[in-house]
Length: 203
Image 1 (tube, helix red, strand yellow):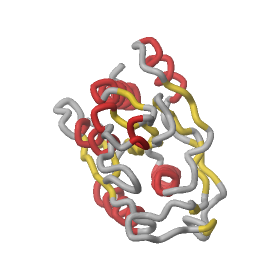
Image 2 (cartoon, one colour):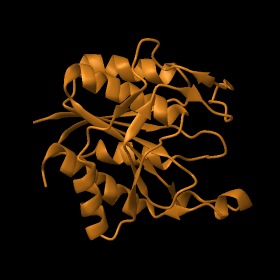
Image 3 (cartoon, one colour):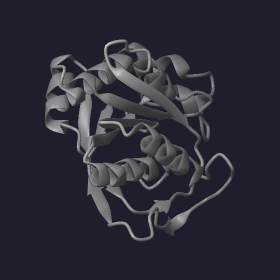
Image 4 (cartoon, one colour):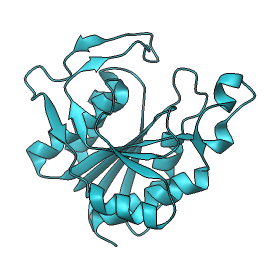
């Protein structure tokens, strides 16, 4: 049985809940696949260190990371991770990064090793909105995506990153939240199951 690591993030910024965490925890309950879920802190450097420690300890065959993008209403299959940290939004410790590299001696970018075309086709056939994205931003999601792909390049494993929208169930009475694009959590979990299944070769 293939060994898998799935990551999500704790809540951050204006978000009191993070559907990426719920998705990671959901996949961690799968009994047919050897999955270890990891919920990462939204902290520059520390999230990367925690992930690298887990990767070296477990040496998985597949790593899929999930993160929240509050501006989309679809599943975003990320293609490119770039070697840059930078965002106007601070991490959960208040740190703002302005363009420094994730890895001092790493390449400018890595490409996802997930079967993105097959995943997209399957999700669309199941009525789940999905798009391929060529920019994961330069916030913590991209840092983790880059970390995963750097490790995959060195180890030969498969891996990639998926952005999910806010869960409908997590919207609040705050006007900034109620106007946010969203998707029902049941569909987010269903999409995550299919992404995992296709990536490990179940279907």
